[in-house]
Figure (cartoon, rainbow, N blue to C red):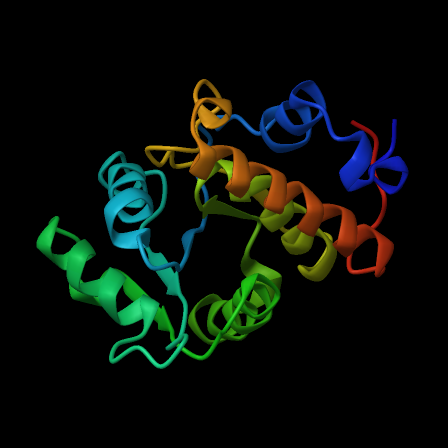
Length: 198
């Protein structure tokens, strides 16, 4: 079954689980840079995963992506930088992208910062850190927008309510998971990235 064949009415728990969680495991590979996508709780769930990868020497730089959203006082990237430094990351190893407002802009604005820091043609692999249930859409957008020579490796970060093993057990988890699958369907239907089989 392809994503384009899915609708809100034919989503089952099995389909939601497969769309969001199947085949997005971290391969453990090293990369040229770690990219962390921002959110309100990114410092809590995503940054520690990125810092672990950094400490494991999987990449020497961390790019934190996310601007000020919904009138907040501080941008997601700036908030994540404070957390990363508190967890021991050297300030000079952090790249800030603080203009993006959504996942598509995360990728587009991150490419500019990657170009400035490394030159895109010199990058072979990036490690992408975001919440597990958000990874499928993020990967699809990155793979579609990034140059073909850059491999995007998933490095998922579990939150409390939307893990593969518990998303269906709470109203919040079920709502997030279902909403994310609808966003993926909309992205495919709008041509943001190609259709794919699940």
